[in-house]
Length: 476
Image (cartoon, rainbow, N blue to C red):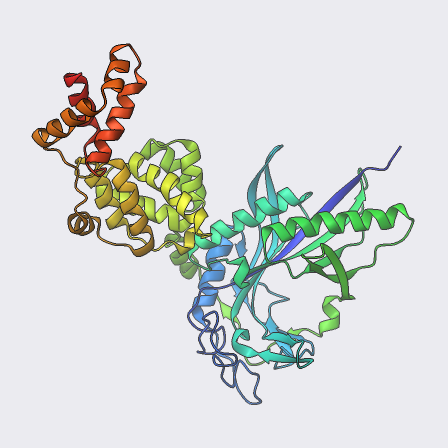
């Protein structure tokens, strides 16, 4: 009988925090920028320069810790992790090994088998390294220190996940918590959220863990899922052939769907960690924790429950609307203005999602204002414009955030609600389409649809459809 294998997975998730400046200096953290333009003596590791801690980094770390049910280490400090690499200008990275700021937390995920808690071993603060750019043309490597010193938190999970689906559910949960807190935008494509996957396999029923490997270079959920499947298969194949899995760090190549060995896996002692002599310990008072706790926003789980109770919208809509903070904010602000949650939800769920898909956009990229969407809903409700004109106007709002009142006025898009003018047009349409009139009298209901269409065409789409139907039926 073939052996059954179980996959054991733990994650190290690095998140770039949304501070305006770096963790130990006042350089900008903005993504992009000409290489080496967001730098100073501190973040380029010049001798004699001294780090000064950015308080906001500590606040974000505590906020994420509280939201993931961790206990906060009230006396914590920074350590130096010593290693030599061209993108690491000091030849050490300031991190936390001995007293990380958060420990022993967990988040709940939904799995096909029900709810499951994924443990969080610890969360620690650290600085990011620079970035090496390999120039194939000149056959050399260049280094950009803009990212050096950007604040990170590293969230280290327990090895509690057993499949790619659980990993994605966990990452999704973390990403939403952090986005809702405003601690990071968590854009995987820009590297503001990165995950390293520690994976091992063992026979089902075995007590001991197998030998694990760590995979780096994963910048999308799809790549992470493929890397897990690929590495699981590679390790099982080795075991089936009677070979050993080597503990090492591997780099995943998503195009080739294969991972390559980078270096043998090192342990903490290889880094000669020691407390950083330039930074004082951080004392976190009870009051400080309470203050951050009091300022925590409503997170997705609570929002979801509230939407279902308060707004009477379908569960599916509530799920989608809360799956991004931007979308949820837009929904709430628009509803606040026009008091029509169902209609706001429809515009976001149908037209907005369609246009986002067509333009290959994320919810975070939406730029139209709740005011203009609320005005558009009012225009339709008042019968000032009909629904097909509203869709055209919305496309312009979506792209350029125009004021729909002014736009409708300038473009002459108002619906014709003047019964006299409508009646005259409809009489003409009836006179020009005797066949359809006859079909209608012979019981063909569809014929009226054709006549409505002809009337709308004659009115350049600006007629009030309800009124057209009413007058048509009367005249027929």
